[in-house]
Length: 355
Length: 259
Image (tube, rainbow over all chains, first blue to last red; front, side):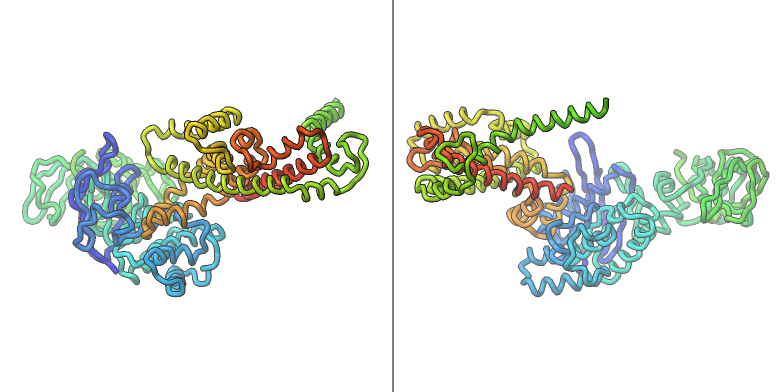
């Protein structure tokens, strides 16, 4: 079962603090959406409003086209996977999974059979008779997922469900969440502060900050063409270089930067840029390469750090401008004080407001 | 020096426990006295005083009364204490703190005052003393205890578990009955066992609030008025034994989960 979700100008105040400020958002049925943002950005509040645990101070929540704003959690077509799993400690795993069906009046044999099916779906065949405290964190997480999915909700809400797991298990659960979501087709709304997790599982990332939606779109879009400085920095490390629009013409945009003039092919997202405007040129560290064609940036290495998948290099560009961070291949042999030249393909440029 | 200190501390411990337990040991020992008076020297052992207790109609009736009052008043105390704890732990009530203080306040008031107050109140309202009034009295002293135990075991992690139950379609009474109460079972069991213990050997309230049907401590007291007798020791030993059993039960249910 699945349904689209629509939030219309949802606002929520806690005393004098505004946790959500007029948030509007539409999610299609069967979409895997991730609400991403730092703690205190309002993402958990938004999830609570979707689940019916919190009432919005203003605005509406529509699920499957129906206004559910006034409905309590039990009467909404949503279920929640809680951060701390919130399993019933005194019940067996199968009884946990079958609880929602029991509340819906399903008879015992039928609901136990269904619980077994759900446990198989999450890879916990035969664990039905065990107690939650006998399971590992990852297994409890699966039980919580099976319990929430057993009642066939239209929308499944996941509140930082992988936060307590170690990195390896988290990666594994991300893959499984994604494949389970594809199989059941339910709309998933997943909250996290981990942008890597968001990119790994989301069809659509909704970046939140200060109670508002900063940006939303596919992981590629949000990472490669972020719409705000906040999104650009939150999605990953970025170098920001002050820039001024010199002029536009024959499908190109000319930027004057401390690193020298940059010629950008005009793209859809640049059409509104006016000549003379002050901007920031955003460069992801992995887009600064020794062997790229494009803008060449000579400079002096300040320091290098080996980070496993790449070498993180801080560089003082010799023309002028702020120090830049570049991710070079592991094998690159560079030492502090050394003069190197990196290059940057303007096609990867991110243009952001000046401040 | 350390040897002396160790010896001294052992001696102190021995004196301490002797001071606490010697009276009980003496009471139990002389319940086996094969003679007419429960005083040294010890002659015996014999079980005839226990047989005498068993054959004493008024003692066995009092024992039955005590049992009924203890179980019923403890059940009521647990139910009231649990509901109050749940309401104050989960709800955001105006003056919640004050209410919490008010509920636990009777723990600091002497049983004599509570008994007198209840006696006067029942008198004014025309309710005559009976086992019911004794039970009400015991519920008054034990509800704060059950409340305190339940309230202490209501953690924030249970809030999400209750929320999950609601999310899955449970009504409020189902949340309480199927999730909250079973989660708090150790606390409820401990509260129940302690309440039974307190009700079981409580004297002054039971004395003030009963008339024809009396509980065991009241019956023992009236036996004592006719002088010392190993039979009273035997009856006292039975009271003590049941109390110890209940306290141990409470300890095990409460502590087993903690570890």
